[in-house]
Length: 286
Image (cartoon, rainbow, N blue to C red; front, top):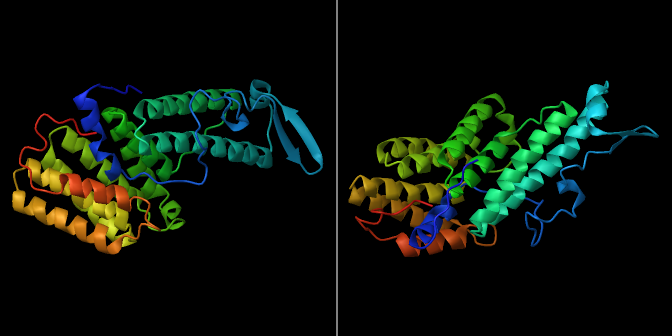
C-alpha cells in the first residue's frame, strides 16, 4: 500500500468523487471505532492464539503455529476460516465507513492493518483466506479513495477475474454485479490517468451491467462519471445528456429511505451538474 495524501485545495478536491465509488454498507460496522482501538477481541492481531474450536462436546485449545503444524479435520478448518472471515469483513467495514465519512487517512490505516493481519493469520495457521469479488471491490474502492491507483487497479482486476469463476456470489445479493463495479472503478482510475477514451469504454460495460441487475444507485453514479469523461473529451452535449440521465435516476428513481446514497449523489449533482469545460483542469480526482 502506498497512499498519497495532499493538503490544502488538492486534498479538498480529492473528496469530490467519493460518492461515485461502488461502496456498500454492511451489518458489521462499529460505532465510533478507530484503527487504534484494540480492545475488541475479533480485531486483535493475536486473536487466534489460543483458538477454541468445539467438536461435539469436546473443546480443543490450539495455538497459532503449533495448530498450523498439526492435522486438522475439515470441520476444524471450516470453523477457523469462518471466524477469520468475520474479522476480515470487519476490517473492510471499518475502512469503508472511514471512506464514506471522508476520513481518508483513517481508511488507509484500516487497509494497512487488514493486509498485515491477513498476512500474519495466514502465516500462523498455514491457511489461505479466500476473498470474494465483493472483497476485491471494497479493497479497490478504498484504495482508489486514498489515491493508491496501482493497488486499486490490481484489486479491480482481481474482482473482475473472480466474478467470472464465482459468479454465483453476486446472485446471493440483490442488485450486485461485481464485474460492473470493477469496470466503474477502472474507468475512474483511467480518467485520473487522463485516459477518458478508455474510461468511457469501461463505463459502457459498467452501465450495462448495473442496468441489468437494477443497481440504480451505481447506475446514476456511472452516468455522473461518464459526464466527466465526456467533458474531458470536450463532448459537452453528450456530457450534458449523461448528467440528465443521472438526474432522472437520482430525482425520480431513488428512494432516500432505501437508497442510502441518494442524498450524496443529489448533492454531487447540484454542485457539479452544470457544463464546465474546465472543471477538470488542475483538479485531482478524489
